[in-house]
Length: 201
Image (tube, rainbow, N blue to C red; front, side, top):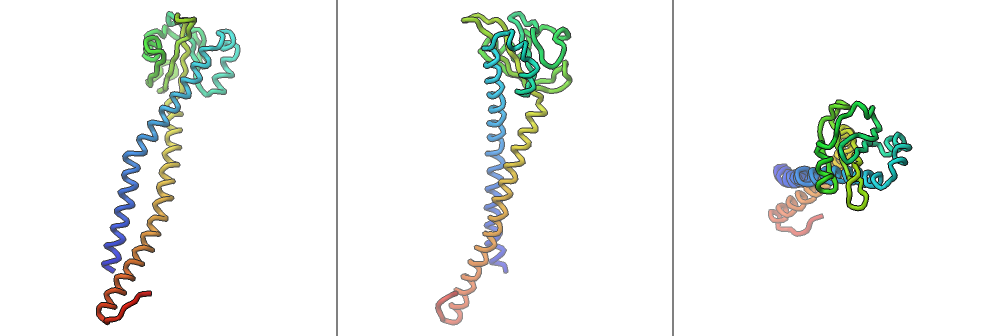
């Protein structure tokens, strides 16, 4: 029995260490890649809209917002809000000093995560400039509630953890089977040593 416990404990520690390593190193990386994927998706949508005529965006603003599941804000080069999908644009101040807009102006695209005083919730923002040749004519900014982003990550984490458990349970069962086989062979070898016979089933 002691031999069984020792061998099984070795298997168990190995399985738990594998799960711990995956959880510690792999999960944060996957979460980061998922976050980057969401940001890249939003940047792609923003660039698509930046290439659209202003009139077309204005005509389809509500539909685009619902279909793409994002809040859409179009801002002119001076920071004035021209279009806003979720609230009354006249209630919004100048946006030129927003971090994502400043970064988009200087680097070609910008992003930020912060609390929106307008909607009273934390949001992920991305912004890209609207250009005519090399001149910036304005900006398209998209936003998505961080709650929605976190929910996507939580669903992914749940799926990954379930995968780990699904792998762990058969591994534990196999470890019990292999431990019993090893213990039988050890017991058989010891019996043969004492009896002077040879051979194990």
